[in-house]
Image 1 (cartoon, rainbow, N blue to C red):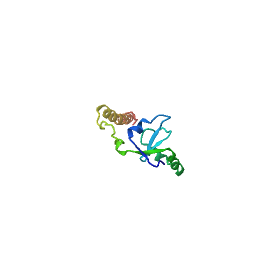
Image 2 (image 1 turned 180 degrees about the horizontal axis):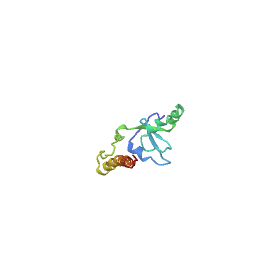
Image 3 (image 1 turned 30 degrees about the horizontal axis):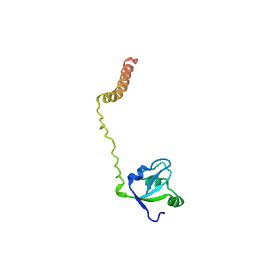
Image 4 (image 1 turned 90 degrees about the horizontal axis):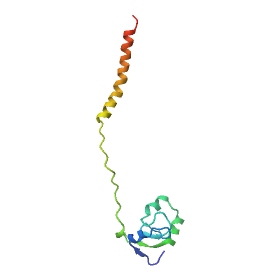
Length: 121
């Protein structure tokens, strides 16, 4: 690792997001690598993969400095989109559900009436 690490601003790291010039942040340290997660804080991406100890040791040759934590933007909390509240009494849907229940009962009742009056005594 560098003996006197340079402190980089997040904006500076974000500029290095090209294929041949890629910087990323892992646990507050800046690395110059070739990776798809460049120009951002890649700590979660790196940790999710579950890298081996040898991979962590390899990171030392790519280390170029520390990140100035005051320049890193705060994480945004996820706010789900507003959904329309469920209304079980929507007129057209409610009528269809009632008819799906009543029509078979009416057919069954009609069948019993026809059978009763057509039955020979």
